[in-house]
Structures are given as structure tokens and as C-alpha cells.
Length: 187
Image (spheres, rainbow, N blue to C red):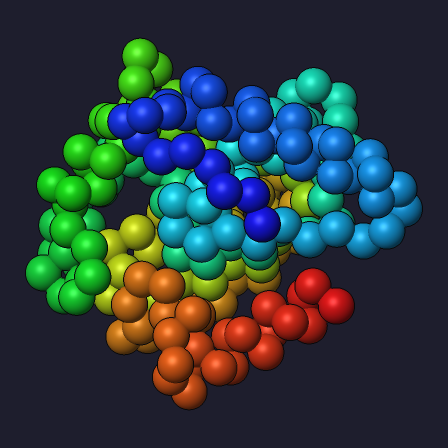
């Protein structure tokens, strides 16, 4: 589990290539072993951006990506997100926008390092995505799954009604069910 520096001390321009390089070395060392990359929230966005970076440089992909409530678009600019934010018990739009701005540093917030939803999806690893409809980021998860499927990437989207951000990691029946699915994905 990599411990990566956070904004504003480090920005996407630094963190994504370094994380991708670490992942490249891990995949190289693992040889033919199955490697699954799991990330939640900002870490899921970083995992996706790092795999896009690897692909763009001709490196191997992991066997699977497991993305839990991925932060895939730092702009949080969809009209429906304003309405979802009223029901989201964990996050708010101003906080995500400010975090995205800090993480972007000198990059535009729409750059794929910051908002990997804006990157390309062709030839990425198969994905398992978890999101809940009380998470203001869930429309991005739905879009991410659609964009990946459109270019042939196998995707399992687990979208649960009335579940909040990171529900898959919570001590609830829904969280336990999601973790069981995650354990099968990494086995």
C-alpha cells in the first residue's frame, strides 16, 4: 500500500507519474502473477490515472482495477450533482472543488492526472467499480463505466441505491457484501 504525499505539498503532476512508476516496478517484479490495484475515493482516481499513464507509455496493466467511490472528475460540474449533494452525508461540492484545485497545482483541473474521467480508457485493465446513489460522485462512476465499456474494457459496476461515498468500506451489510466481492476480485 503506497503512502503518497497529499496536496498542496504534492500535486497530480508529481504524484501520478511517481505512483505509476511504482506500479510499473511492482508489475515487473510480480512477473506473471496476478496484480489487482484497489483504490478508494481520491486513491481510486489516482489508481485510474496511474494505469492510464502506464498504458500511454506501453507498460503492462494490472489484472484488474477495483475502484471504490472513485474521484474521477474534480470539476464536480454536473447539474445533477447539486441535487445529490443535498443528500450526501459525507462530501460537499466546495470541498471537492478546492481539493481538486490544490491537487491540480499548475495543471488544469480537467487534466486526466487530476480528472481521469477525461483520459482515454482503451486497453485499460478490467474494472470493478463501487458507488452509491447518495455519493455526489456517483454520476462520474456511471459515466466512467460507460466510457470504459464503449472501448471494450470489461466493467462490473456495483451501484447501490441510498448508499454514501465509500459505502464499500463501512461496517454495514452493504459494506460487508461489497468487501466480499472485492475479496473475490483480488483472489
